[in-house]
Length: 43
Image 1 (cartoon, one colour):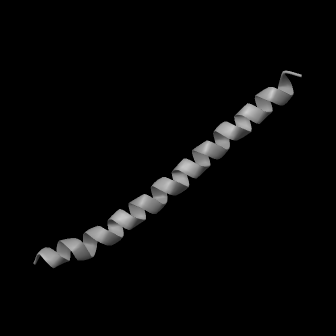
Image 2 (tube, one colour; image 1 turned 135 degrees about the vertical axis):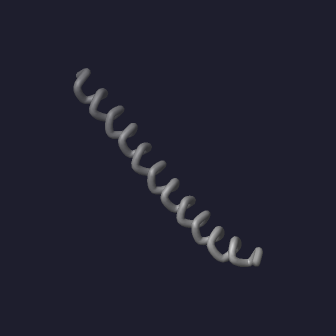
């Protein structure tokens, strides 16, 4: 029965890793956008 945990757990872990990577990319893009915006407004 342990294989059911692996069968369900591995895809869920992979999905979590993908969602985490997507969230990280979105937040990094937002930080970069704010830095560029602040730099252009200060001129």
